[in-house]
Image (cartoon, rainbow, N blue to C red):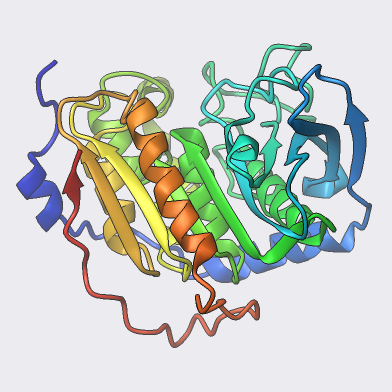
Length: 350
């Protein structure tokens, strides 16, 4: 598989000038305030999975507009005291799946909260969490749903769901609210970056081969979906280019990542035809908190796979074990006067 994007040296030097809406912070502050005002209480119902070392709960959290969002909570049965927690968001087209399928983080001794993605997945029509918004004028897929307005866009709903899910993790009695980390692969990595930017006070973020970063560039150069959905939409609607990319700028995780303060561990694959490496580097370079990176030079969208899980386990173990780790302030940061960016980190080739 050949390189289809910039070289590693070019990606390291890349500093794209992304269009940022003037009201980006106000848009999201208003969106999240409205979601929280909707009220509702997370529900956790025990599930018998047949596993003896992991206790699992069927989760329902009020998300965007108070709509129920499903998930799984996995807890290691032999652990005691409030636990560090990994909140995981899923890849494109995936739902939460079966209750016993994803228990890695719980077997490592951490709480693990998995969020279903509205309208995606397979267990029922549209998944366990349907997307209730009207879907008109789109091409197949999720990226162009509601693309005529940021208020209607699909990922406005998903990012809100994700913030509310992470807040539910913080409030759970089994979880140490100061040790909550967000993670995900591809779409899940983009969602994790968005949450890290929208929700102060996280302990960390682990985005893998993230989607939804520098979306305009992704739509221009990606060889495979989902970014190609945007190109297909604009091939049909030639007069809507600026409207579409203005809407997508409100959900561009590279822009939201600049607001993050938590430590992070990124991964990027240099032969990725789905999420071109330059788009992941756009988010990495703009990320506002301390950052580390693993680069997989000869991998496509599968990224580091099990090798990267091993990297994450080590990174997370060190993060959670550090007794004097500074806990970020959970108050909403002063976005008019951001702190100085940390020194750039030299990525490690895996």
